Image 1: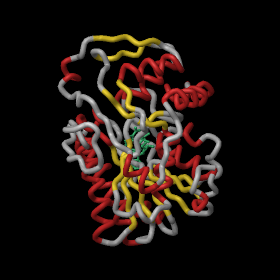
Image 2: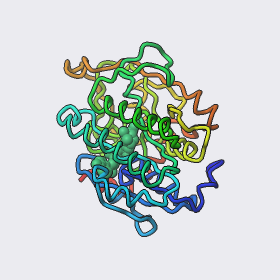
Image 3: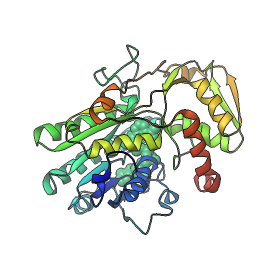
Image 4: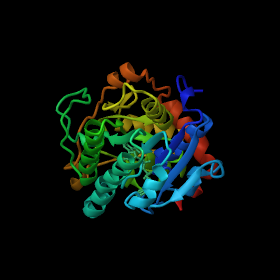
Length: 331
Ligand SMILES: NC(=O)c1ccc[n+]([C@@H]2O[C@H](COP(=O)([O-])OP(=O)(O)OC[C@H]3O[C@@H](n4cnc5c(N)ncnc54)[C@H](O)[C@@H]3O)[C@@H](O)[C@H]2O)c1
């Protein structure tokens, strides 16, 4: 059992977006720890929501298929819950540029709906919201921490930045117990492999599992933090049971700082496929943010979080998972 998480036993846990990548991994772990789990998800076809993600647990969790933009059902679902992991989001950077109003609707209005439901009907609930490192945009220093300013370069990241602030406003104004955990390039079992729109690493893993070529732009020298999903979930669970985390923002990113080329080579070594280097397409080069190196000092100090996987062990577990069910993620 992961250290320090025994207090989750018998807790009522609600996970919005629980059919998606991160949310479903939280659901599996919470069940393992003895929590009662409810998933609230609309199975948005443009997201990583997938019935396969609850394979093996669907009879042990309550699943409500509905939208966070619908106020009444989210109010009903929030009653009697102890902890809420807010994972539902419109999660694609390119789709947010194509459909900015949908992104605002889900990521901003949807988040306020969830917060209002909590404020009115269950103000004592602990809320853990997931933010993203892409809220930062171009980084003005290396290594950056939670105090770095945010200048997002796409609508999704801008709306994630705003929705994080709503969560903190509710915490501050209404004395609610809210925490933000920002993730970056999270990979692993149950991820959305189908399209590069949801982050390059899981897409590369999908190509490698199909023994295809992984295309790296330029020399792939830009640094990134990558985090195995089990480690990210561990951080989220620690935040959910901590009182010290109330009102705080944390980056939960692994210690490993690798460049894109090293990440691609590790994927082909552990999974398959081969790496191909090509010239930068001009439309991609202008939105490239350069190196991204993030500190995990705050979360380690406050919550005693320690990531347990390096890239090789994370990729091995990822391959083992998808070897049995890859087709369910490519269809
Ligand atoms: N995957 C990463 O690397 C990463 C990095 C940083 C932040 N995040 C954040 O983590 C959270 C989860 O992301 P993910 O990677 O699991 O994405 P995902 O696309 O796999 O899951 C999102 C889930 O939310 C559901 N959803 C979308 N709109 C909804 C709505 N209106 N009502 C109800 N459910 C809705 C989808 O059906 C899906 O199951 C998001 O907030 C995302 O911004 C993820």
